[in-house]
Length: 450
Image 1 (tube, helix red, strand yellow):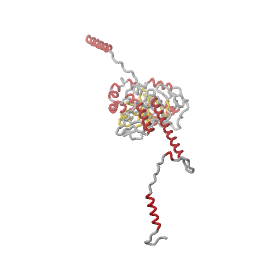
Image 2: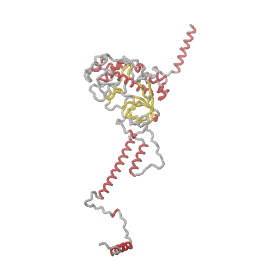
Image 3: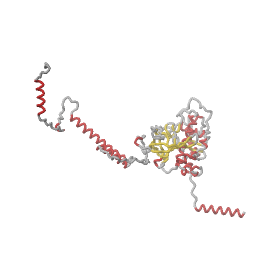
Image 4: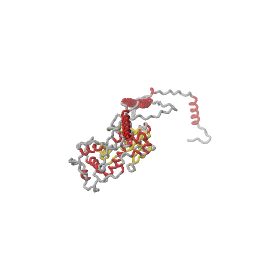
């Protein structure tokens, strides 16, 4: 029952006196709670016990420490096998130790020393394309050859080069490479960079690119005849790596798949029953035969290899033995091909005349339709006539230097031993010079007497 207005009650008085009494008492001291006083007894009904959480935390810490020790062991193994330099090993080791201890070796206000490019390795280790995000960007000069205008074009680009070769040939090692474009911000298509292992003039690389362009021209001419299987030669160009003391390498498209060598430049032909490393097939052999006839017997494309019918790294023999590098064996190489070649169904369908009594049955069959041309189309392009003279362009001299590429001693057919496979003339000795002087004196005296 509520009191009337102005009346006092004993309830309010007793409540106020109780509050005053509580405030006048001394405050009790609350003891500090310690970790060891916490009861870790499992309480029924709780989803996870406290002591179970502590044990799981210790297990996670132990696993993390083991993982860090495994990383250190792997890092040491990579340095011992030559995949990491001592500087890279120490840097990554410090990073792992900092992760274990939760510390940092980076001093405030101190900038890290920029990473330097490591030299490429020569020992071949077969492997798949690497993770390019860990590789440094490099400046490069791209030199491409235009087969239509027979001119060289130059532009700047940014690349990333794998340091470990994944394959090798007789003269060159192959490395994975990414081309990131002029500004270095492209996705980066995968290519193959080929570096000659040993002393080589840049003209050797020029010769390889020009030779691949000639083969691409004849592949296009071959495909105009509508064969059952068309052929293709991968695009190729040069790179001058500015950050590697202007190291020159040739670059071409990466061909994924099983790489097969079908023939070489000395009459070798793969076995018909083989399906992996070497194999005799109708299309590669017919294409070599076709180039011999289409060029009016002036040249022959051999050393066919690649993935399926996408070819690369060819060799060309010429009737006069000039041009296309030291692998050009001239008429001797042509004879070797004619001796081992077996015409097949594709040769017969193209209307190519049988070169010998050998014939290879089976394989790729002739199409049911007739060849669209009345006869083999002969080459009329300047690329056949003006072979190996494209390196005279101003662009080449600007990029690769006039002393090593475009000087007369390296471009004339008579005195270029690397390009044309002919031994250089021996230097004249003092005795030979004296003998020539005596001969000229005798000729002069004889002329006066007459």
